[in-house]
Image 1: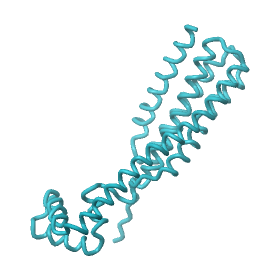
Image 2 (image 1 turned 30 degrees about the vertical axis):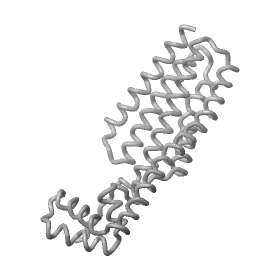
Image 3 (image 1 turned 45 degrees about the vertical axis):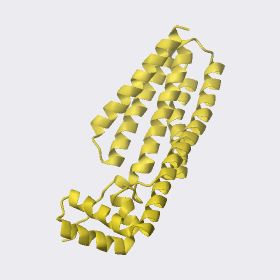
Image 4 (image 1 turned 30 degrees about the horizontal axis):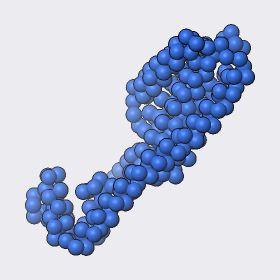
Length: 225
């Protein structure tokens, strides 16, 4: 019988950046707006603050993700270059390393040595990258993808609280921003959990709890001014 499996590990790279960007956009924008609204800012001040936060946040997220993931990619490339050199200059030792890895995973020494021999003949660098360094095509760093996803999702996350702040009158602005953001956080948590195959309730509770805490602290600080 055919057995189809639908794993989600290939989504880790962009899903992490997407959740981080959207969550940061929601929480940063809502917290900042709540802070300035609590301080008695005018509509114009709220507008300028919101637009500036949206642009600066999206660019900051993109730059931060690109630099961070690029550093990871540089480390992976350096390790692969080192491994490639070791395979060329000391193949016997590298074969022993691979054999030891498979023995540690439960194979007897003879079978582990045979597996190491066959994998080395097929793709020596790929075997060492995957089994010794933990680098695979699925989990490899992609700086451009992470930067674009983070910037786009930050903007998408920041827009709802900004629109609420601009539409609602001052008398209910704080309540509307808080309620709208908490709702958006719950939706984001559910979508992230569904995309990653995780528990919807746990993800929703975690992201809503921390987002609400951030908004409460910022609003409290703003009220003192």
